[in-house]
Amino acid sequence: MKMRNSRVLQKLRAGEVVSCLKINFGDAQASELAAMSGFDCLWVDREHLAQDWSVVAAHTWATKAQNTDLMVRVPRGSYSDYIKPLEMDATGILVPHVMGVEDARKVVEMARFHPLGQRAIDGGSADGAYTRMDFQDYLRHSNEQKFIALQIEDVAAMDELEEIAALEGYDMLFFGPGDFSQSIGAPGNWTHPDLIAARKKVAEVARKYGKFAATSGGIQHLPDFIAMGYQFVNVGADVVGMSQYCNELQEKFAAARHNSK
Image (cartoon, rainbow, N blue to C red; front, top):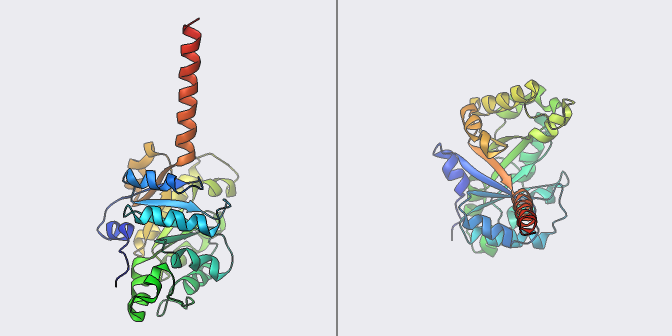
């Protein structure tokens, strides 16, 4: 019995660029539809959204069925908040607002098995095939095929960025432009020079220390992100697509109704 290999890590390790879409809707049919479209990874959120564990489980099943990875952004809480998505067989976790190297070290300690950390062991959940995996294989494969992304989205975190990047035991540095724009006093100003400089710096330092650089932004900026060194890019969200589609239909409906008078 073997753990499913991460599609994201396989592509990143091969030097490829990974596509990701954020899923805000609670119904896992949204994840299933997006996964059918061919995204490498889907991102569901427990930092801001009230998705209970049964909803996360449904998203996990929907993505696994299409060989798509699932990344869960966890709330900043206890160790169990970090490991439960992994035990449910999500492929990775995104930890928001990592503020410094000691903060990052604690995340690795809680979310990785020996020798990288001291993650609490069970093995009786979906990721361990309900105890059907060999115990040592389970520990090793979890460290190799489950990814951890640390989100850099505060000015304060930049002071120890190199130390965070040099830390062993995690895979990605994820630059979060939304909260970072707020932390520099320019909410929503995506072209602010300090934000652009920080985005470039995160990618540069990640690659310097053998980590993968991840971020989010509009699909129109993807070439720029790739040029900066980003290999993992979240390019949109289901709610954005649905909103735009509804607006477009309503505008066309209104125009047709007006022209028919």
